Image (cartoon, rainbow, N blue to C red; front, top):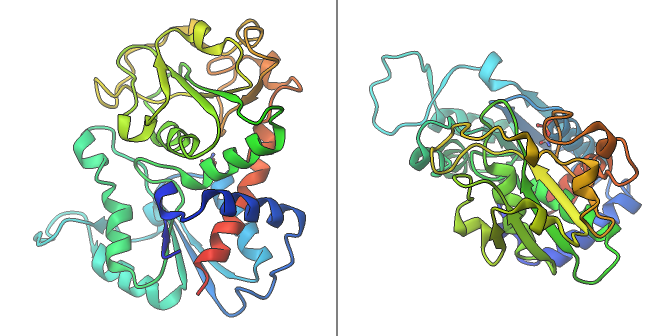
Amino acid sequence: MEKYTSVHDVPDVTALLNEALQCKKTPWEWENLGKHKTLGLLFFNPSLRTRMSTQKAASHLGLQIISMNIDKDGWKIETEEGVIMDGDKAEHIKEAAGVISQYCDILGVRSFPGLINKQMDYQDEVLQNFIKYASVPVLSLESAIRHPLQSLADLMTIEEHKQTDRPKVVLTWAPHPKPLPQAVGNSFAEWMNQADVDLVITCPEGYELDSQFTGNATITHNQNEALEGADFVYAKNWSSTASYGQVINTDRSWTISKEKMALTNQGKFMHCLPVRRNMVVTDDVLDSPASLVLEQANNRTYSAQAVLKRLIK
Ligand code: CP
């Protein structure tokens, strides 16, 4: 692979999934693959799981790691072409990407959306400009619109826990006090469209994800109906798509509770973390054996390892 930004960069999803599962079984089997090579990780936004799991994955492959909170420790980056740089942005992404490409053999970038202008956010400007101007493979650590390392870990988790060949997977919106990106929901839907699952997405009106991501999923505003017979319940908040980037609904009846899980087929609960307890999901679900959230976080290491294996040249 030349880059990893979405499921569309993956020639064979099943092969990558199997590779990630193999990495979990024998993580140190390829410990010299990345010898004398460097992975650069640029964070424009906070992270716990993505940073630590990607670093752990890189160490399994013998890669050196340079990690930087570029929003705090770097120069402010300009992405616009032909602009007179007389504002607060001191470095253009052209030079930044060119310089980093001399220090690193693979570059990971995390950059969230501004949630003000949908058209701008959905161009995924920071990630796309790093791809354009870097001369090394670029890896998304969550962009304005997708989170593909999370989605591969989620697919691994479903594969490990499914009881039927074609499980029913429900992606449900859940309440949150702050406006959040749509990236996890978009990406999860996109990946589930490539998997052998029955995908149902449920959200309040005004929160419908873009059809380019939801694909063949069944979409409903009736959460209880969606949850009936579900094998997996993936809860996630995202901000409104209709009133872009805003919180237009805080209805706590969408919180995933024990009563909601009782509608499912003894379903498993999933969330990418971090999660707000008793807002997105109640304690009794998160602390129950039905919760797979720690397994998902653990699988982040092996999904990253499988992807890095393919990006090492
Ligand atoms: N799920 C996830 O990406 O976690 P972090 O934001 O902590 O990296």
